[in-house]
Image (cartoon, rainbow, N blue to C red; front, side, top):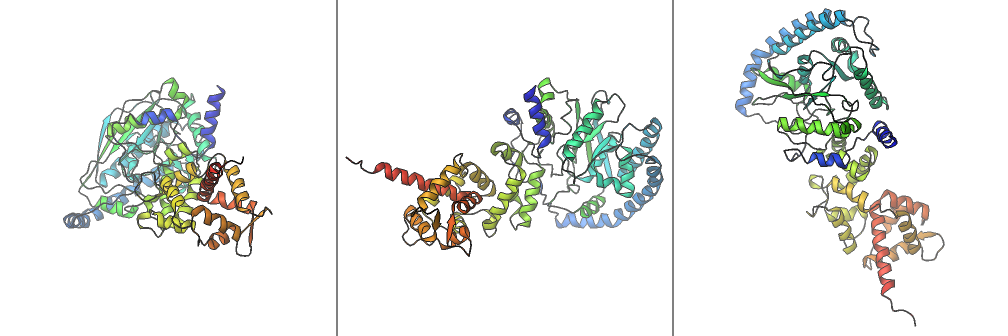
Length: 516
């Protein structure tokens, strides 16, 4: 029981949600290999003929559809205002029956009419479960704001939404009717608060509405199912998976970080003769006793079942990957450089978001000028301010895990974490400093550092003045151990090189003839 509580506290307190070894084995049960380059980008190419058809149809359809939708919004406004009277943003009890049956029914009808005016042909498969059968819906893949169709088809269940949306004049009123679970992004405890609220509702004896959650947490291009967040699975109650499909020849609805803008998505979609949508209610999934205790295992099992039904692979990409991708673009790197499958790499290397994001900044400092965001041994040499030599080649090969002659960001992170942070780093740095400190005065000068590195690299004319200035600072001619240690920990590749140098020294001493 103590182990279970400790595991649960870890899930609640950390920002990173990782898969354990059992979950990693479950991933292998997916029927489709995760050959996905980027789930967060979409490059739709429209031929000249397709553009011509879109423009011609849009000239006629867009004004008509926009007029109908505006008229519908005029009708929707008083209904939304009436339905939201005296509704708190943080409800403590379910809404009254008249609101539930009368107002919700009117809103569902108006929303369905609105999607029809927009050209959506909605096909529903399967049977929607009752609250007693499944208190929670989990819908995927999440690829567009038009996925709100699933909410309407499910009868306006409660949704997990950003608290900012509740302040939007019309949409906010409609969201309040569903008695949403509002997330405050600025609150560091929002994830834990959200889970506690979901748990309170599904375990309550009061007749709360069912909750619909998009467990991926962000929009993808529907090429795979990314890591599921644990909010829907932590309560350990039955869930009903809801699949979303858009079986159209031209994809105009997908809204990703790198693709069509929201306005373009709306205009292109309204310009189509019609847009097909399929909403499928899968059979309710009842978790096993083991899955009730392990929400990570529960989430992954449901994800695999949904992926197999959709004939899609699963990957360990997550919201953090998307943030890294955006950060990479801001650092003038290819955005794909940030796609490292954060869930998998953070679990294996015990890294959190701050660590990997810090590594991205370091990587960008010397990879931004390299083609494709990858670096070769020349750029690696320039970054370390050391010549290309056998020790440097060996270090580079340890980073270059696929042996293609280049290092990408994922390899860089793994290399720094696994290869350049040995468990006895402190001891290595102490021994290295003693070797560099030839006069044993507690400081290393540029001359001492030059002498030792020339011997280590076998380069008689090695110039380490730039490296020494970076280590000591412009106004200092010597380095203390504290400064040396801080520099080596900030640039772990040097710690690995120092380790290699110590091994060379040990081999040399061992090979000397013993004194008689």
